[in-house]
Amino acid sequence: MSNIGLIIEERPRQVGNFMVGRLLPFHSKRTVGPFIFIDHMGPVRMDDHENVDIGPHPHIGLSTLTYLFEGSMMHRDSLGTAVEITPGAVNWMTAGKGIVHSERTPERLRNVDKHMHGLQIWVALPKEKEEMEPSFHHVEAQALPHWEADGARYKLIAGEVMGHRSPVPVHSRLFLLEITAVDDHEVRFAEGLYGEAGLYILSGEVHTEGEAFGPRQILVARDAKQCGFHMAAGTTVYLFGGEPFPEERFIYWNFVATTQEKLEAAQQRWRELAFPMIPGEHDPVPLPTERRTTNQK
Image (cartoon, rainbow, N blue to C red):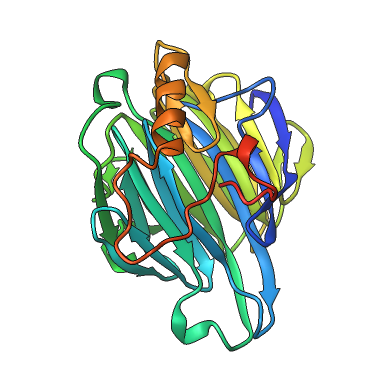
């Protein structure tokens, strides 16, 4: 990406019973547009006795976006939703004033060898919407806008860019675009991008400003309106960003808010289990200071 302002490397973190690569937040760059959290999950192979079991945990002030490359995950939440997340589909859960969900290996896969690989993303809500009612939307892979241009395949996962709009119901102006280069491919945006922009390299190689960059890195642009880069054949990247918010965002555990007071109130609500709960699930994840393991989201 031309005009690189920052390079962020993945850092290992434990989530549940497997390791992920933490990309955002970063100490010198907490957000890119409204994107406030990105984990790269896997790729990991799990044996027949290994399963993902992230029990009921709460969120406020954000939307979660789960996007899998391989594997499946069973999502359940306090709205009564029960949906299996499969590769290429988008699960978009808006927490608003409060929601609880769990993520587990589906029953049909719990006793077989399996793989898991994907992205877990949080998008902060605008201040005027952080107390909105929670909601959940599942968008199948074939419903996402996709097109080809000059030896590359494009898929718009969320938001709007390049004259296309995703059906995922976002709450602010943003974009999350997958680009896969079949051949060597030069990416240029005739009208530029808007807000802030980051480029995550999943596989392959990106060339810009006379340098080569590889997987598990985010390149953050100094100026989103002047983004451009060259992709080697076989490369897949994710371009993301959008309009940043004027207010600072605070994070504690699974909570995002515009004030520390909202975070503290959410912590107390979870201690008292005053959030709405998931029907039939009885293993809530305790607050970080009150638990013995490190299975936070």
